[in-house]
Image (cartoon, rainbow, N blue to C red):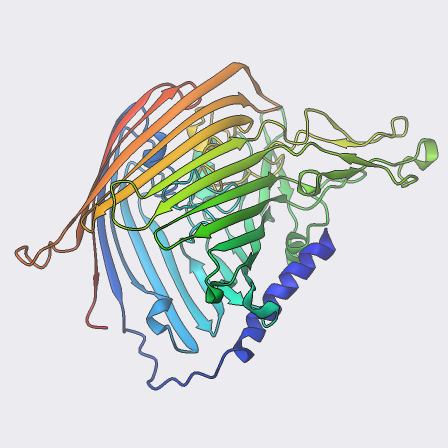
Length: 531
């Protein structure tokens, strides 16, 4: 596994540097203008609900949401996109996005604050920036299982090959992109407040993500088919954890630090503090194998895609070594024997796209299954029992770290019920074994009007550690319409303003009963000065 990861990342970094030598030389005819192309955004939003804010009125908004009955915000930001310097060998981008919320987990939010530079194809970003999902529809999908858009951005240093680069062999049929990033979460104070320091929490959690994608296809020969495949991985590590000692106090655990901890996050290895005989790997390691088959015609197209989630090596490789000896040789590998796990826990999706303006332009259908988790049995081999089984993967949870969340929201797919829903002050995903069906539809019959609909049915079993006493079900619905004010008769300050209205509802017992909500958003974007 380490050799596979090091090869993928090595190729990514090498190609990021090598790409500059494969392109024809571009000559920049003017000096870089850091203030050229500067854009602004002003947005106001208000939500009212009976019960909690419904799922699809608060999920997949980069964590900019609240479950409170009445909530809202005023938001303002400026941004210089990297695309401003398209055509130059060097590009500069930056942005600042500040939110003043009402009834949120924070009194003020710096949603984005970053600066980034591009040299040919390679991009370096420093700070917190909203990054879109790969290989999925960002408006209609239920969300990626690993690199999702449901939680606030993590401040990080990110090296990326952001767009597909055509490899200098295979006659233009093979392309690649990806990234490597390190950062630190910012929800330490929220964890203190949410848990009242009476249940598990961790200060200064470190974050690492990496991804690599290959694309097979060639648009230059007018081939409408393409295949994209990739690996996404995340590690949460480091920091100082506090766990209940069972006697009313909290036990302090110093997690891995230093360069070795960063290396073990990059290539999964090491061990958590306190592990001796049975060592797994350092921190919370998780990821997804992803794939997408595309057909892109002149008027329409469609895609079939898959997202195979894993929480450790048993689910990543579908294999576990099971050939240990007995007695005094119980820790020695004696046989070439492996345990093959079932190929379950998939997210499977279909997307249809119709390009001309129409009342129905996009349809997304997804099926999610997460009930297996390498099986219901966890057992490390012992001096008397040689069999080695590794089940109960407990998706998105970790026994030391607070799991795959940021500010209470799942950093992957929001159908894994986020800890922010918990009423007992525990940072824990209480429904990670479920099956779900999701539908998304949208249309843009004119340049001024667009709409979308999301609908999800879910059956949950809880977790292996804390199963529900009976199956729970949930249905979440959302309808949204956006109208853009245009026309020369309108005052200049009103033109190109989006007015968006959304209504949502939850029915069932997974999200604590029935919820109904209404959300109004007014947003205006524009250009500061001239391009």
